[in-house]
Length: 156
Image (cartoon, rainbow, N blue to C red; front, side, top):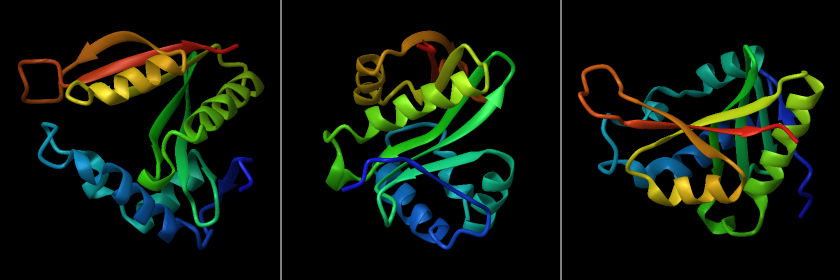
């Protein structure tokens, strides 16, 4: 399998397969996290909009791993990082994070940032093993407790 990340554009036919991948990857969260994942609002049309405004990177054809990169002041934000359940623990997430690191360097951004839900302790451990550390805890609107953990990693 070619592990080279490739970018999807707004008219890429792989966006429909990407939406399936995201649902396969994040479906287990239903009922585990509060509030529910924003994935329920993601459609093929919204992915086209995202691809026009940010960078969607995938590994595999059809996509087996993906992330959405959004440049923000002083950091590159990684959203919807996921690996197909059938291909986890093969290093695909590490390849994506290494690519995000290279993109941040190219954009002259010194930090990678992502968010994970408080309840998803396995995700915390995975991202920690990939060099991320907890930066902050935040609460979604209407919650009186932290619901999300912001993690950061300096660009190497």
